[in-house]
Image (cartoon, rainbow, N blue to C red; front, side):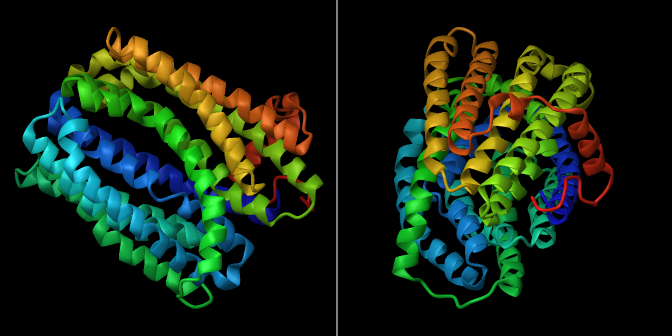
Length: 440
């Protein structure tokens, strides 16, 4: 790690702190406005469209990060190629989802299915532009612009959410439409920011498209089990269970995933940073230190969140959501484990090793499928939570093994923070100065 890396992580941590507050406010408002069943309906509307739009991007946003970092002078060509290449499969899945939505949301009423169809169209098309532009900024290392861009949609969404509630439009269908509109508004603004900072010309290049797909498709195949591990529980609940169960579970998930805001900036900066390093020794040193600090941060934040989660459920979401407390007490340790695994996965992407992600997430998916098949019909809340915990432990184990195999770093060296790591983690939280020696 270098002074620039440390400064980018700190700035991203600040923005993630703001995003954490916005996410918590959004989750609280949605729960208070919609109630348990309405919160479940809202989650059902968003669940399948967001999953399908993410998977059928073919991993091109990840390729934009990697190729923009490697060839910053051709970043406009990279973004344009990704947008055009991604539009074809996305259009096909939007059409297919229109006809399939009554089947995959068979437990939901017709108005909820209609809202999910509309959300698929608006969200899918706008996030293609939004993702490619944001990922271009991330790959270029323009983290100030990237961090500002990440704030646009959440802040706009909060304003629209409050306004909709104030004028009496606060039902699940209207709020899902307003959420999609927020992406439609923000996507062109993010693109303008990327345009101002990018280099090259906007043209689609077939050789570049092939190279990006060779990188992106394995990443995307890894994304399928990754997204399934993170979302399959909610997707199946949306398809087969009543909205009330999903509403309780989503609140537990929302609270547990707040932990990611403390650690995700490290992984987000790490991809492009490691991709730019040429010395294998520097890559190994960076990987080891970042991994140990992520373990430390995840443990501290996880303990705090575990201790305060029951009170937070009662105070923020209300007594109607108290039944979600046992689930959140299982999901918080699961989120801490996965936070470390996701940072190591980012390192593997920076090393140009998407197939390693595929193997790790596939192993976790096997656990997820087996666990949900048995627990979801019997113990939907607790069963889904325990399944997530076991799946994330499996993913972390496989990712650690791949990092060891590729770089030669010992597993203990990635997991056991030293006194120096503690000092550097504190320095990272308090200062923008370098927290590691120069040259790495």
